[in-house]
Length: 238
Image 1 (tube, rainbow, N blue to C red):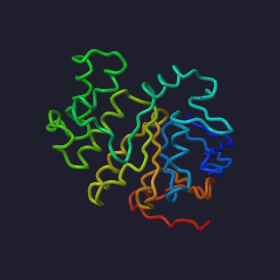
Image 2: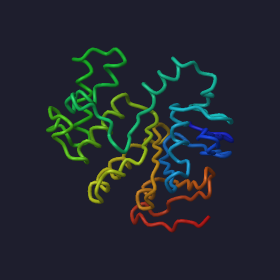
Image 3: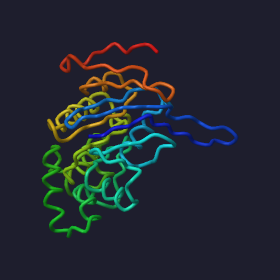
Image 4: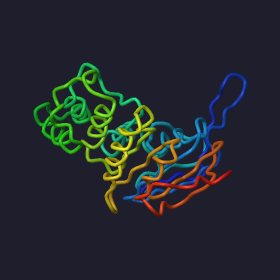
């Protein structure tokens, strides 16, 4: 479904070059929940941005549903992000002047769907994440956990085939984080929707089916999560 082949990403920083990714190859199948784990600066968010068509690699190739992203026009890439990929970020990225239901409906409105029609699945999405009673509230009237649920509903409103989450619990307390992780765990659909979650939290990573460990821009280790109920793993050493 999504694949990176020998991908590198280099950034100029003053007089030196930062090598964020160095020859990373990774394939994610339809229906998988993949956790990408590593310390700050390891390259995990960079990899997610490349796979979500938010950035382009310095070298190597990225594929989405077997199609190379570098062969797509800017318009096609924009359509891909708007209609097939849902994004969830650490700081929610909700518009403060819009109510919860309007924030959820925003991707549909930007696609040209009329307001009345767009609000129907937006209300349904809020009900799915348990926030229908907060539909008319603005972001500053909600808790961090509630705002992240709104962000998840927004990511799902387009019925994406991939949901990419960048540190989705990084700005939440432990109890709220657990609630969000349980919600994310329900999102993959066998043979259809995949979920990719970037995290530095070993406990959060165990909600995935597979954990990819990244260090210094390279895949350091990979493991299957055998016991998803206990959510306990031993992080391999470099």
